[in-house]
Length: 389
Image (cartoon, rainbow, N blue to C red; front, side, top):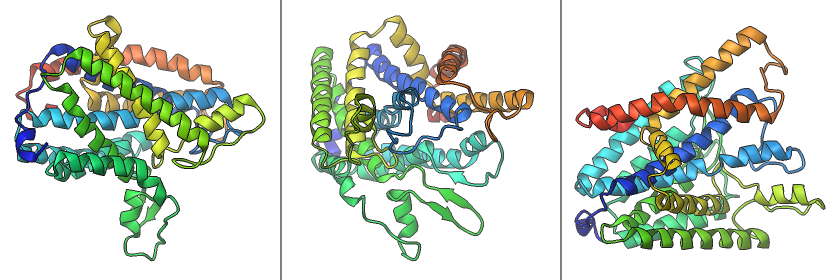
């Protein structure tokens, strides 16, 4: 597909299709809440990346694993949404929108999001996390959309599949390209005289993911039936999971090797423990394959209660992200003031069950303001700044 004809292809415009996309986006954001509760109230039990199978309890590992799907699927959907946007706008207009929104997200990470995580501003260290990463991916995509689709597919696949070849390539602080490489691939603490940055989300593999979302979006052509689309997503998702199991079992590429510990439970944890920072080939393969299966299911069960509720979360993703961080920080500050630290310097939940209990309560409570904002956003499309949330 060339730049010229990319904007001429009709897009399905049914509410159901859009609901399935919003539902998947909302679903992964709700799962993200589980991990952010863990990072707020369970920091006394640190989790390594990849997880140490012998040092991490099964309940903590699987709680952490629940949210593994979130970032890959959300960034893939960001690419898909960018393509859908391009069908109603010229390539140059789409590029400008991606650039502006990407810059906005980077700014938001460095200001509001950092404050909501740290509880003060400026923080001791600026953690450059997922919103920063999405912003840089959108900025990159703003230029990449001018490339013909066949070449763009090759670039996306090469990055996602091949980047683990670079795992052992490291640059020292004396290198001219050290800072750039730390942002792209080498997770580092960048200590400048006036600011300290932590490149928590090296962006190179994520750029590959947003590209794959962009080039997969033509599955939503107007002349592609829902049945064909669901079948394609089920097949691709199933093949992806089988491929993951085969490559992971062979233990030769795509992530840190797994170990047979002599116990099924810890061996399984080792097998499933994958590197997120930056995301390995096998991490993205497994999570994106699951994402395709979930998207097919949301499209199959479009219009039911659960899909509708998830789509409400997905219709206002940036609002939900910032709002839930504010609620978690407020809860922590209040409970810390009342009860004081319970484990060293931390106020900590006594067990994993409290994470899941808090999750259920917060999902219920956060649904109503998120739905209200989403409805306001939908009813006021003429307000330009709302599209950024």
